[in-house]
Length: 369
Image (cartoon, rainbow, N blue to C red; front, side, top):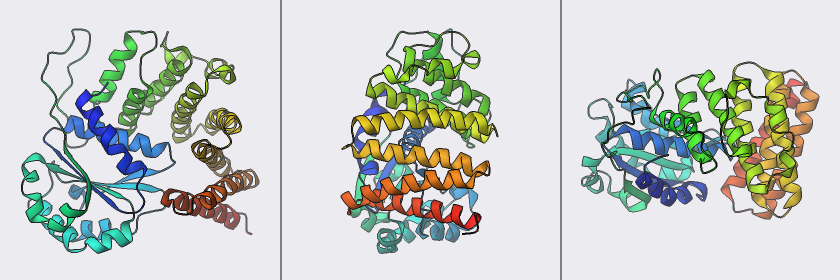
């Protein structure tokens, strides 16, 4: 569970990401890492449901600020749904001002070449000076807000005290989202646990490289989607048996279950367990097919189905089954051609179509065609 103030900001911010057509500029001002991480994780989770990723351009990774400027202006990959530049934490001295000046001078290049939402995270103190440092950017911003610092409170006796987040995004210790998820699930509550909280925890575990914790969280999400609670050790649960009656669930629960299964499948694929990942992706695909059949006029359901075809296709391609991968990619392509034709002005539909053309072309090239 995130801070309700952060929830409110995300609700206002989300449409500027999800409905963006081309370039849009989002300014977030913050003084504490926790709400920044919560917004970033929510953004990644939102993009993930659309088969897109978040490209993070960290100033600390560049020895020359000019390199970061060029990287931000370069055309992003097709599967990049948004750009994120943290300029509030520990960037080298002078980089923030330099970048804002350079981006301000090249506003037209941002609008022409980036064609994605760009999120700049800045210290609260710079809110009053931003319009002077980068007046053109300030005028064209689509959204700006100040993230609240957490309200100080004593931790519950039953939960561990979280260490202050480090600059490496808590690569060693579980983040706040994971600790909150642990508290929620340990209470063994009936219903009321939001899968969105699980997605935040899952993203946190993935970010710090803990596949074990990410897998546990994903299974807990599956269990909650079906049963409304967590019982026993998630790692001992038979996911196949748990999802055997998924067709009896209502459409909203089926989509939630599909997202949870995709998370679990991603972990298994990353761990090299392709057979397990394939089974999970196929269970997710079956749910996508059922949802698309039940509501054939839903663009979201059709897009979800195209994403599922691609995910199963990815596993088949990695396993060397190029014929199977080609068939799945072509099914996804057919759906995306239809969606792009139905809404020719949708930047998302055009990006999806480009990704599908790329996937089909890649597998054909590998097959020697």
